[in-house]
Image (cartoon, rainbow, N blue to C red; front, side, top):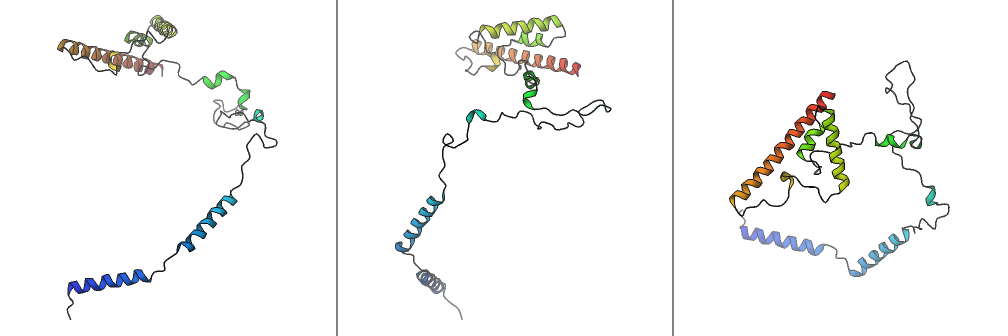
Length: 200
């Protein structure tokens, strides 16, 4: 027995329609009271928060100091002592350590990549083998920083403005200046790496 395709399609659409009519329909009178009940129960269940100033026994001046160290006080620091016969050191509280101890690992050297107050000559002399040239470069950098930011010149390869393109000569000169500054910066980086490699 063969069934026509159109007849089969009509039969399936009719059966789907009757199934949709058989579903229970919810009225507004049934949905709205439940919605209001939900709102009322959720609003009544949330506790009322009192401000910190009104709470009894809360003193803002008696706040705990911020813990800077990674281990609590009294922890035995195993493996830190270079002499095995001596006892292992014990961690102290943060307020018992001197203030300068927390700043020991800060890098005070001006970085070559982002410090625009250093010229290529200063950055090259800062990591020179000669102690006198290193001190002279540090003095020049400190004097320029103390003078203010107004007289700091941005290197040609770090400028964000467009290069001049009105004449061919101006554009070529700007490109040469940027290449020259980039080359000097790379040379200073090489000197720095060589200097630090000899220390370690």
